[in-house]
Length: 370
Ligand code: NAD
Ligand code: TDX
Image (cartoon, rainbow, N blue to C red; front, side, top):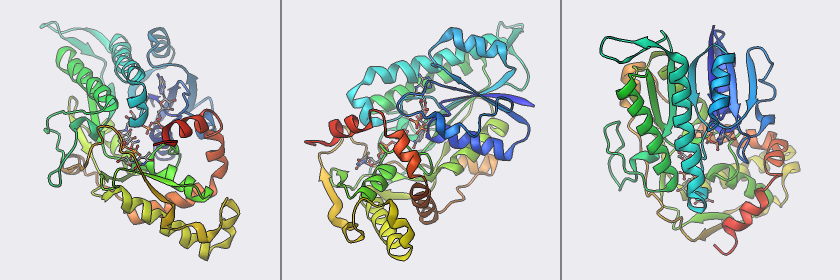
């Protein structure tokens, strides 16, 4: 058995990863560390936490004492660091929080792992690591900056972050690299494109649009809606991470992407069309609507002021992970988006739950007078 410390697992991707691990790998125990910020929800993982294969600890990745205690208490040999402030718009409002969590938090985990996993020194003074240990950093394609019409991000594309969010994620990646070079830490990084799927917090484009359509609210599209994102179904991302943790070469970066480039406005229109079709053909779902079926149309789209420094296009070249590890995106976007919409229709209680806190204030602050 191996014990994984999975941080940020009460959020979107981390919770999907824990569910994926528990369902597919019998050789893994999990310690979840999550601060339960606005983006973390215990209910998302409550059914996974059994106190045996999976335990939950509420806490901050910046807390050095807590991290040391976890390494002392559990035989952790793998860290998968999802915990982060993840929303670009919030990073424009409060850059410092992103620096705190995404950079200092990652460095704190790197140090805690180093203290727990180093057993001595080799003849050149480099640390000797316990066999089989691995630190995995979950990063993003946003560290590469923004593309024009052509080209793809590869692992050798220069880092060129442009938002406080991506600047902080880039700094975290550089700390991981520094620990690899300086201490020979067995660490890996994955840089992934935009994820979508179950448990996605409704501040991000796809779940926000789904929620607003069902409530008959306007759909805020930034700028002209022509910015391009490369969408990946979240379970495909989880599979990629696990392949890298198990088989990826220590010290390496792997790009993960879905070959699914779409303009934002295409996403919004497709989501409107799909929900309208479901409501027309499966009347039982009309019970979740706070509007009439006839109102589900393109008139809901409203163009609002653009995001400051809005990256134009992201597109990942995942050749390396496919060639080295055999990973490929299994879920076609057209299937994934339908699955995702049904998941939200069937989990309105979850949406209500995660938006019961400060969500309404955030929403008004972000979109009123935009
Ligand atoms: P999320 O915002 O849904 O979840 C983040 C989780 O981290 C939450 O459960 C939150 O409570 C927890 N957290 C925040 N600060 C913490 C702290 N100081 N200590 C402990 N826990 C803390 O994020 P997500 O979309 O699931 O993203 C997860 C990771 O994947 C992030 O590192 C993000 O940068 C990266 N990523 C996301 C995407 C995407 O499309 N969502 C794409 C590529 C990479
Ligand atoms: O209301 C909106 N209207 C809109 O037009 C929102 C919330 C977004 N957008 C646009 C901005 C982007 O071009 O949609 C696109 C997607 O926006 P987000 O869902 O906020 O994602 P993005 O900024 O692309 O970042 C996401 O992918 C990379 C994640 O939030 C990051 O954590 C990840 O690293």
